Image (cartoon, rainbow, N blue to C red; front, side, top):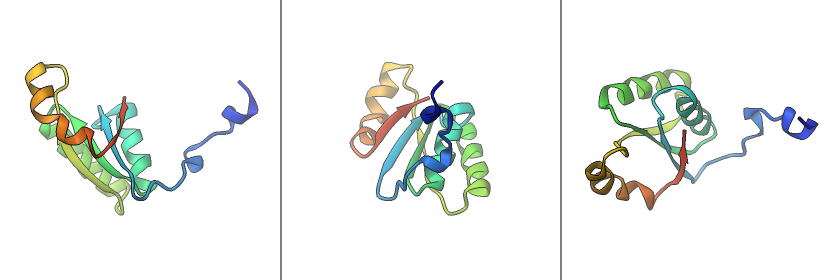
Length: 100
């Protein structure tokens, strides 16, 4: 690994104010970490989760870890065609999409 990538940290993420990010799998693991860091950097974050309860729990955790963050739940189930066609399109137009 070269020094340029070895030294990268979340401190290197530039200000994200004015940007919207939709993070799939945002209620846990890598997805949650992406939500957390982008929210800390000022992005409006759409935390996408299939399960409303898990998504809500993640938002509550986020509020404690990044109180100034701007995040909301985007309940999406992209594994099934009806959910994809019914609920996903309204989010695609407003967000840069990261899949975790």
